[in-house]
Image (cartoon, rainbow, N blue to C red; front, side, top):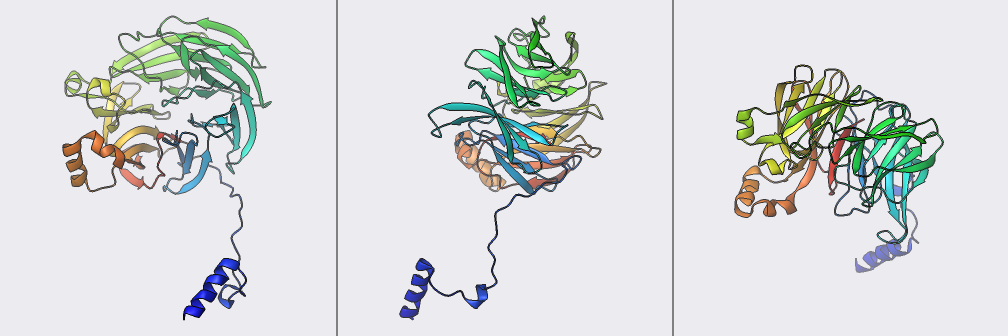
Length: 406
């Protein structure tokens, strides 16, 4: 018996034994590239984030409506996520790499991915100044005709890099002092939100050169009610929520920025009870029905970026709340698909333990006791009636902070 065992061990180490008849017909799997079908109107969605604590390897994951994983992109150091094209089968990511992994020469690129294979097609080098932030909304944006991509820079001097996607080239860098997140407003017009409550207006020509630079008058008072930069758009109107739990509608056109209206998201009684906005990317919008979805929680006003427990749905015409959707888990970001049967997605923090045990840890050790146990998951709901549809667990460890319908 010992002699036979030694023979098998030597066989495994040297690969010198004859193939057993059982494995004679075995054919090893060959590496290949799968081709995705058309993603439109199928309720597919992406999640992405910095992949903390391993920030050198940002990640973006693609799932279908059943929660099945379809693909993965690696998007470089402290990822700002993806920009999804609606006119081309392409995906864009502004990425940072270092020649020695975490040190050495820095290279910033806009990578163009094939939306069917998720394989890189082109790299367009840009100035090594790209801004990295937890709130990634507005840091890389497409012109409405998808000809140009604007990438926000921060050194801490602020500027934008202009990329010509049609000709695959970097065009120029334009200073935007005091202004950051960018919002498209027409085929060649963009607005960057500024610290004084105004906007920095840029207009490009057909070659991507700047033909207009001007500052608008303040559209809100940041000292009285600061807007969060995660805006949602319908036509020429952008919707924002504020730290003091108000919604703002700002019309952005080639002529300028005009405040349309604003309204409270909470009643006086709800405000006194502690209800307020929540999450890192806590708003979403369904265009066809004109509904604004806002992630909410009950907490101190200064904790407005902590996870939310409910989603409140508002009618944009009447500016009245239509529904409250209670979430299964605490959510850091939400998204809404745009089909006739829209999905509400929540990107959640989960403690994979029985609720009583979780409560015991919280009561005895507080947040510090729960932090090492946290994992992330996704929950899908019917955006019309709030019914919970399914949960997606087992997301690889890493800080994901955006969920985006495709």
